[in-house]
Amino acid sequence: QVQLVESGGGVVQPGRSLRLSCAASGFTFSDFGMHWVRQAPGKGLEWVAVISYDGSKKYYVDSVKGRFTISRDNSKNTLYLQMNSLRGEDTAVYYCAKDDRASAFDIWGQGTMVTVSS
Amino acid sequence: SYELAQPPSVSVSPGQTASITCSGDKLGDKYVCWYQQKPGQSPVLVIHQDTKRPSGIPERFSGSNSGNTATLTISGTQTMDEADYYCQAWDSSVVFGGGTKLTVL
Image (cartoon, rainbow over all chains, first blue to last red; front, side, top):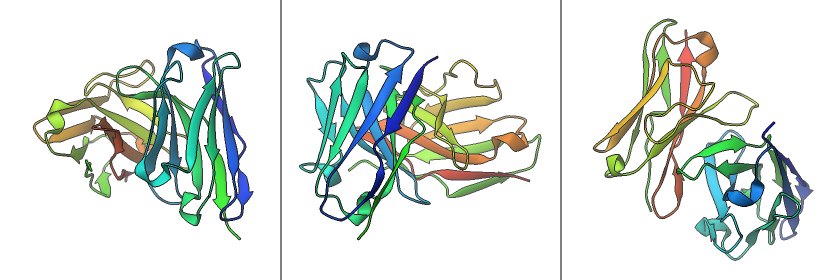
């Protein structure tokens, strides 16, 4: 079935780096744009980044520009989020989500928790 | 930056109709979608392109969008519908509303 599975979360000190992965299955991964969305504890959803189906276009929320990098490997059906210079305010559950080509996210992963703390 | 405003909470009695609003400048000119999120779970798309229900979403969920306001309507609300609901649209980037906690009591 259609599935997204995130991994790579954990506890990290401020200023350090972490890379998240999102393994896709059940659909043609290379046909769809993909997003990262995060949710701080007890808070709402915040869009983080998007990458086009072929990886040629990438966009970020202002608060992560220059620190986070979204990428994908279509041969491995995997989406990535490289997070550098992490801050306390980056603490959140990070979800990957599939773009349905019509402005919505139709498939979400289960999320991976990132905690930035000394 | 573009903003979407939702009421923090809405209460409804079982079997009644719940309406959750989402407001933004000229929102009717954009596609709006809605997500349901239950505690400890990932969001689930319940309405896309303003009015369309994905496969598997009950018919009691419907949406509308006009002017500056989009509305998610749940007819014959059930206790299982108790959740947080988020609207979402695209402006220059993806924007989510702040979320509405729907209580069914």
